[in-house]
Amino acid sequence: MNAQPQPAFTEEAEDCGSRSTLRARLGLFLLVMGPGLIVMLADTDAGSLVTAAQSGAQWGYTLITLQLALIPILFMVQEMTVRLGLHTGRGHGELIRETFGTLWAWISVSTLLLSCVGALVTEMIGVAGAGQVYGIPIDASVWATVFFLLLVVVTGSYRSVEIVAILVGLFELALFYVAYRAHPQMGRLARGLVTFPLGHTSYLYLVAANIGAVIMPWMVFYQQAAVVDKKLKRHHLREARADTLLGAFLTQAIMIAMIVATAATIGRTDPHASLNNIPEISRTLTSFLGQTAGRAVFAAGIIGASLVAAIVVSVTAAWGLGEVSGYRRSLNHRLHEAPWFYLVYTLALAAGALLVTSGVNLVRLSIGIEVMNALLLPIVLGFLYLLARRALPPEHRLRGSYAVIVLALVVLTVTLGVFGGLQAL
Image (cartoon, rainbow, N blue to C red):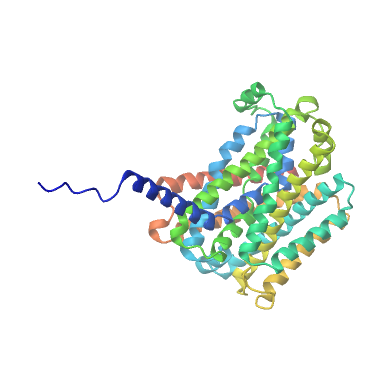
């Protein structure tokens, strides 16, 4: 009798193949990862962290549930930018020009430039505030930041800028240590997750402020341009979505860490403390965490948050204007190959630095920027939704119940963002 044929593979071979497939998928994810993670780390910038600190100090742990609920909103909005970039190969401003015309493209990019310069001011205020903790003059901190950002972008490629941005942004993880050192009481934290004092105006204001801080106008432009500049293609959609989802969880976790740190310390002893800027937050927190280690770790987190956001918004300004005007606009181009791109980038940095060092009231300036960003949201998110409905190939457009859900979330974000901005006045 003939021997029975042997199977073509053994269990060991199947297991080895599974591991190889897993390694291949992980390797592909690491190659694609970057735009989503960076834009989310930039989202947790100095202004957002000040909002989180005020939330924890005034209302304890009651705004943590909101931060968790914002994760799907953040992901849905930024996933639309990924889908548009991968399937069209166009930046956001360029796609608006092709779909709605030149006039609307210029209106859109004008809002972007205002948002970017405003965000740069916020980030430089954050770096300057961290410097003030150590007695460093504002001018020195701001112009050192400008020099660092110029050095990173002018001397690098897209990939090198991406790596620097991620490494700088990861300093935000120091805030998890700050939250741990604050020794939060788990019982109070658990009760805070199910407590929603909606009858208080100040609570509703912070709800709106936290929602308004989630979606920044420059985030939409940056991530769409980044996936194009990185030369990602439509078959990278799954990994690009995973990159965006990872970033959404991470940025909201950082916000939660700041809320926990202030709720467990300032919120327990002095909920009415003034926390309008970085030095005030640092002075109050370090009285609980220790003057040396606590101050150093907190400053590292703030500087990381501010620098990664500064990289993102300054590059976005140069990308966005180039998409509408047509000049060469890739980080992979050298200075002589894309002079207008680097000129706009430099001018954006200079404008932000001059505003911060001009002697204006920085707290009022920060509030003004918050109001401006909130009022720009209807234009930015309106165009994003319409593009996702019109500019994509039919099989990838927003449609059906998902389109209705996204529209509802966009309207909610815009409404509460604008409400928070107007209340800040």
